[in-house]
Image (cartoon, rainbow over all chains, first blue to last red; front, side, top):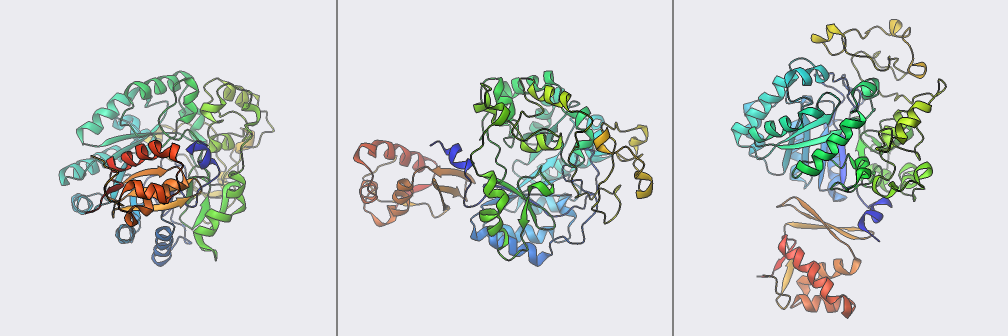
Length: 407
Length: 88
């Protein structure tokens, strides 16, 4: 049996664990996969977070990907970072750079076993700030400068590929080279607020091909988080697992301790349990009903007869789910066009699943109810000052908006 | 140069995590993950310390003689990436 076949049946501990420390964020990126903005009052305390780290050490989870929200806005972030490293749990954290001043950069340069990933979604301020908000490009660049100046070895620059930045791939490489950084590119998912902008931001079919060709030609040393395995159906398999690892080798611990099958699947349907439950994270990982089910052999469904099923494995579960497609059918960005057909075949009765977890600053406070949005909303002019301009803060008004299902 | 006649051990910088297929190996120095793809290979690697040579560890793990060359190749790879090393 190939290693990848073993992986489908699950591992004793995850290989790639994402842990989002807070829903609080100073930015309000239009495509935020976790709909972050405001802190959740139920977030894990410092002591609880440390006991999760203890558990990860016992389970021999050798490193975690920490994110948010913006993890560095937690006042105990640096304490937790040191605690994890001291307990053999290495940390790679994603940040927009807001707290990476010269002093922090120097501190990080002196810490072994920490990777830093700066998010950047445009190689120019114009393209980046349209998605991530005004000033965010400058913030990221300043953080990269500080890290380079402090002699921090090879931070990552993490780019979500969109219709607006596929043409900038070589420019991203140039930026990475300038700062002694490594480029990481990942796929835009229709998760969180990403669902609201996916239609207009996800790469076109031609751009997907362009991206694939670029990866094959120039992708050496470029990290992808295995997120483009659906492109393998173009021909040559891309480096990586080429497998949806959700609940098998991958999972997410969210800021309130909820464990989801993958970072892009924050929805009740993919909620396996909570680290605060008596058995802790280990019990959820090893015995939850959801993860057990995900580790059953996959049938391939409608894709089984496709000659490319072996290379793409039907693509990304979250991408299918949040675009209202069946989980055992084609990925919405299937390179053979079956996803587009399936999207076109959705009728007015297709209800797009919407996560109840929304910490957007535009969402009604403490609401777990549906947050109405208009799909395909283009950032309007006033967006020059705030990426969420035009979104109502007032819940009563937002009720009048067109619900997703009917859009 | 990897010499299976000499005594070896698992690097002290390495942690071995048992998995259904064998084990996952993490090197805290290089931060690289590697995989021991059979339970027998895990036995060999964890048993190195108790044996006078790599060959003896392979014998003790009950590896099929026909498989020895394949195991030696795998172990040479593990020596090259620092997972195992000669015992001082």
